[in-house]
Amino acid sequence: MTHLTRRALLRAAVAAPLAGLAGTSLIARADAPQFVFKYGNNLPLTHPLNVRAQEAANQIREASKGRMEIRIFPNNQLGGDTDMLAQVRSGGIEMFTPSALVVSTLAPVAAINAIGFAFKDYDQVWAAMDGKVGAYVRAAMQKAGLESFPKMWDNGFRETTTSTRPITTAADMHSLKIRVPVSPLSIDMFKGLGASPTSLQFSEVYSSLQTHIVDAQENPLPIVQVAKLYEVQKYCSLTNHIWDGFWFVLNQRAWQRLPKDLQSIASDAFDQAALRQRDDVRKLNEAAVADLQSKGLAINRPAPDTFRAALRQANFYTEWKGKFGDQAWSLLESYTGKLA
Ligand code: X2X
Image 1 (cartoon, rainbow, N blue to C red):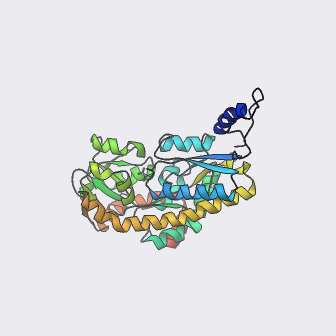
Image 2: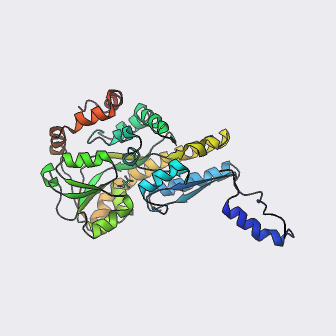
Image 3: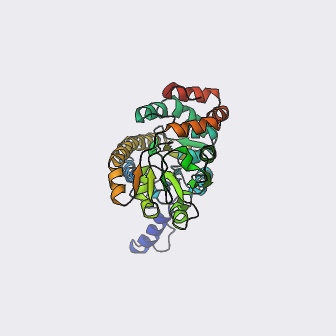
């Protein structure tokens, strides 16, 4: 964005008369940033994603000597996920951090990390996403018009909360009215488990649980904490059914207009912040069970086998292998072991 920012214009307008320049046209202040990137996301300010993104923004301002500014709009201020995804493609905003589940509405293969029960642990997750699976997904996003930074940010392993009953086996999913993100894979997976899933933007989750439009939702524990979902849920079942992360995506034209030195300053700052954010989420997860129990959630740890069996029986794995294609699927399996 090489233009006078609105704030710079306002500042110039205010400064002009004082400087004895009344009557001259508006002048940009020398310290106004040349490049302003608006970054929207769907999470509360307290989530590590926002804390570490702000650090990256500060680092970029300093390293670029004020030439580049990142303005963060957290908590769905600029709209829900589907809106922000449209805006980052059109250039209404320059950056967005959608979950891989949500990116898949544009680049279908982006949902591959969310295949049910694919990853055993974080070692497998980061090997795959910092390695060949991530590279494959980034190439697909680029074809769909989105640039991205190399490092994915952590959302976490998704767990299931309900207001009605704990989930102990797949049978407890039967007809459960559960909210899932706007993502075909989530819908298909929960249908395969026997539930009645509905896609809603994250911005709608709290109120739809509160008013019982849905009885359940599924998200990593740090999200249950920062979005205060424990206020409107009773049970939390550690199903660990999907590992989910956020891609830092950028408008292609805005990225290409950025001089090479600023590209590398921004990319380095966000990738370094990503590593710290992953560490934050790991620590939050370690303390989350005790914290959520103290806030009144009843927590249980179901074994994964009945869920896996239900998905196999529903042909979930073979169907999604077909959708993602043999090449992507074998890349995933090179990290996770055989899935289908
Ligand atoms: O919408 C969700 O559930 C969240 C916050 O995990 C995502 O962004 C996918």
